[in-house]
Image (tube, rainbow, N blue to C red):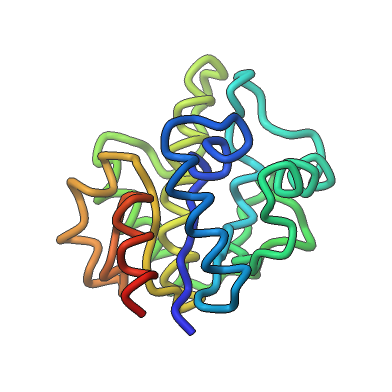
Length: 182
């Protein structure tokens, strides 16, 4: 069964009924009918929320998934980064997985540093960039088929991400079209 990975923006779009929610609701209907699988990367719980803060615990993220109608979505765990995620929802890293993550982050955000910044005021941007890189890494590691995002940075960098097994980066509308054709 084909798996569609939803990035953090898709979850927010569903929860807040933003414009792409119409397509994501249609994708959810196809998922609920058993035609496709939907995956969410647990690191989305660590990303800054519209309030500007990250979630205090994983239960808040589970509640967010419930509000978005995604409580039974497949959880895609990322590699763990100290003081960044939730212990039961991340994987132990290896030298190889860390090197892949660094390369993915370098593609998506060539000016971003790999380690957390010393200046706390720049931490928010670094945190979201790291989450995006972990979404891409997890999508590949868990062998998901289509990464669903409206984030133009992913779409602009699609070609170099192919070498990491990320072969299909699609908008929510494109995802529906693909899922209907399966």
